[in-house]
Amino acid sequence: MRRKTMAKGLLAGLALLLAACGGGAPPQDLALSGVSPNSPSVVQGGSVTLTLTFTSQNGFQGTVSLSVIKDGQEPSWLTLSPTSANLNVPKGGQVQETLQVGVAPDAPIGAHSLKLKATYGSKTAERDLTLTVNPPPSFALSLNPSSLAVQQGGQAQTTLTLTPQNGFTGTVSLSLVPGQDGVPQGLSLSPQSVQVTGSSPVTQPLTISASSSTPTGTYRIKVRGTAGSLTKEADLTVTVSAPSGGGGGGGGSSGSAGGVQVSLQGGTFTQGPTAQNVSPPPGFQAPYGAIAFTAQVPQGGTLTVTLTFPSPIPQGAVLKKYQGNAWQDVPGAQLSGNTATYQVQDGDPLDGDGQRNGQVVDPVALLVPNAPTATWMRTYGT
Image (tube, rainbow, N blue to C red):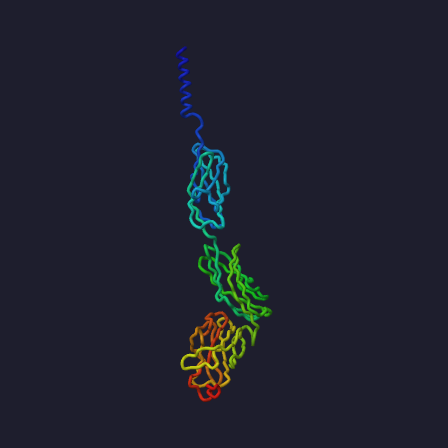
């Protein structure tokens, strides 16, 4: 009897020992075993979705708080959604949860080394994460030329260059909008959109048209490009003039300066003509100074200029352009009697602005030798 009692006691003690050593339910555990993608990129003001994979050897059921740490603290420019999740991870299994990571519009650009933390109770599961913040896609606009002359009922052209930035692609809508001045009635732009499909700058000829009722004057306006919430602008100055001698830059016009009658064929005056004082080259004098004017012509068109002087042109006189404080020959100039005729093409070297923009800038002078004829001396007293 005594032996049976001792045996029962030994068995009870052994059972208690076994229970203390390995008996009962094992503790729950949790591991953050994966983040996909683990090196995501996001633009300023945007967000990215991550997939988190949780695993457990002994099973886990409960609430997990989620956070992101950079240099020991949560970045103020970063937000998470959700910030907590209720998990039920089976023993030896795994579950996945999605996490939305958003960054502020002023988030620092570049790669950020972060630590993603899942906290449950007094324990934490962690995973390293590299998040790259990029500037948002955008574009820049420029115009060449940025100043145009157009007649009522006519048109002129400029070239728009659209430069995509940070991977921008898509359709950009174009329009004329007020700048320092309002957009006059009847002034329009064509085309009204441009397509960007790659990373290279896109060039697009733009036609600015004025109706027959567009008020004359100079207008400092803008060309606006819009794509979604993006808006960019480029300055444009448009001078609208009344048609003359056939209109559209193809007729004629005349004026006088310093006693010289100036007639145009193929264009019309938008400024001048006026006489300017110049320093003639050695061996010559410029009795009429330089005759300066600006004329509108069809883009790339040719302007024929006739200068009629009050007296016959003396032998040895030449016609020269005065540009950049230097004298240049006028090829093909014809001098006869008291007239000089020459041609200048929009955008060629004789065009003072050097641009193919439907506008000719023309300072020209008749240069007379320092030993003029007797008739010239009697006329001008030199």
